[in-house]
Image (tube, rainbow, N blue to C red; front, side, top):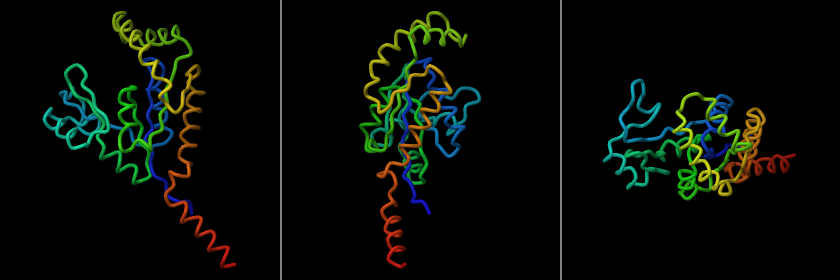
Length: 213
């Protein structure tokens, strides 16, 4: 029987429009046992949002207490509200041998890599095939104004400058090929010897079988 595996933390980052969210959704469909990291936030719930499903909604005081107690893997203030990744559910998933997927920016990824769980992080940065294609994809969404798109494009250069901080880089020229590459990375990382804590005992059992022959 195969030895149990410790869950890992898969960080997926990219500039807006490079395909990160699409890859994250496909990965969750491919492996329903994977846990998607639900962020905590101090902003008010929007209509239809459910606490614990879309976000963990917390008061500012509750959020700050969680940060002070070391209960956040990463956090940041965005437009006057705090957002962060609670540590407890991630550790629980790890003990169960389940992986946690983080769809976050380079700053959040950096905080998690520098946390107590950093050795269990696998980080992947997704790049567009060209800047022209990145802008085409943003405009193809037909969701944002020219002003918003210009802002996203301006931010993209700063985000892309952090590509070398990641374990793996995928150039998303074709979404199917990019997804295959992402799955290959995940499957290989799951098989690392140091992520299988019961492996030594399993091999000792094989040796006992040899001795009993």
